[in-house]
Length: 238
Image (cartoon, rainbow, N blue to C red; front, side):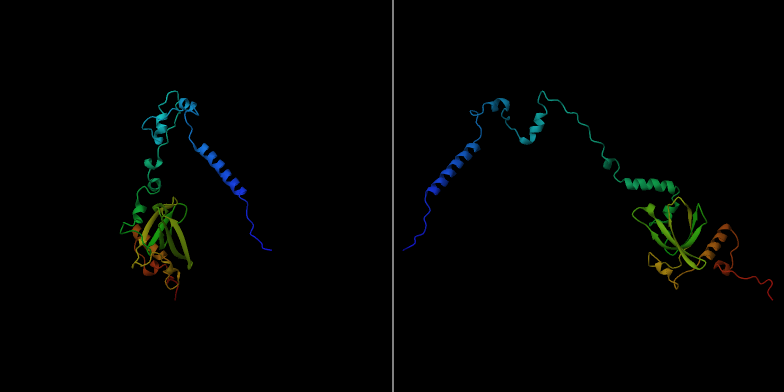
């Protein structure tokens, strides 16, 4: 008995072809554009565009149609960028003019000034709410704006190293004076190595006292007085 391969009837193929023809006719029916004969109301409700009509100009053409109500439009505010291109610098200059009306502190720390304060100098900072503070400048911190300029002073009190930060344009700072310039300019902008015992300059009270005495017009003190050392009197000694 021989086995033959099953044969699929042709009826199913004919049915599939017939279905495809029906779907193609429906697709063509919906794809055909509407004509005036099928939809006569299109010409009366939506007239054809004028010659030379462009879709990009449709909004502009509709502005001049009759019967349309004009929509009130609020004008945009004035551009702040055009009125004030750089507000931060203007605000900074106003604050500096109030905090430093004479411009002495600005010139004292200006990079363009050859006699500006540099690390290693000895300064005296006079405060409004306390005694003046003196010390050696270890660092001058200048950030993006000159109004943020600050200095770090180091001195010794009772043989203990003390460091204090001062804002140059702080309202509490009454004045800044240069007592002594550095003998030799350091190659570094931050003299943090002076915190080590072998590089520490010690107390600067003797130098400050000599400067104040010289400014007041008094006689200069001895070398021992300038270094801040005290000597015992010979009176009463045998």
